[in-house]
Length: 115
View (cartoon, rainbow, N blue to C red):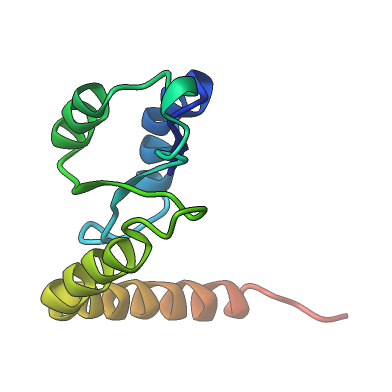
């Protein structure tokens, strides 16, 4: 999510995307949401520039305005629909992670000595 009236927030998107990728499952669903599109005179990031970044990251892009209630429900629906479409893959990845963490916990538990 970034504010179209704040170029710095847009420039942080790639860094946040890369950081979140380190700590998430492969099929985690993301969407790039632009906010404050109602502030046309203060806009610093164009639709085309943001769409290009979203395409590069391989995620959907939508522009919103909470003030004018533009595309708020649609943004949530896109994300929910993508989660639903990929739920089986996400669930399998989460199950694998849980099993890995359980075995890691058990391995570490055997190393614990109480004196």
